[in-house]
Length: 79
Image (spheres, one colour):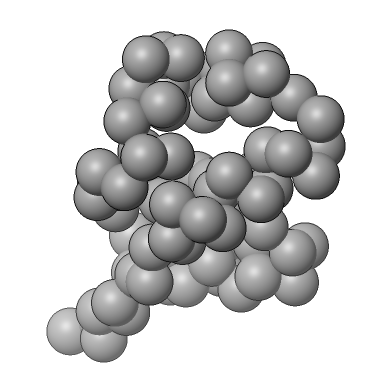
């Protein structure tokens, strides 16, 4: 059985930093991963991120090497 990897969710502060660094509105930032502005606002305010959303955020806005590593793990586990 493949080993499960625990996803470490970005913090609300990290998510807010990613958005501000890119100078995007909440709507612009959250739209590529299918999250509404109002839900994104709640996540930026500290509501825990569901694992699928955390993974998508890492893939879209995290460091490229982290995205490649996550994709590789997902393909191994679910491939």
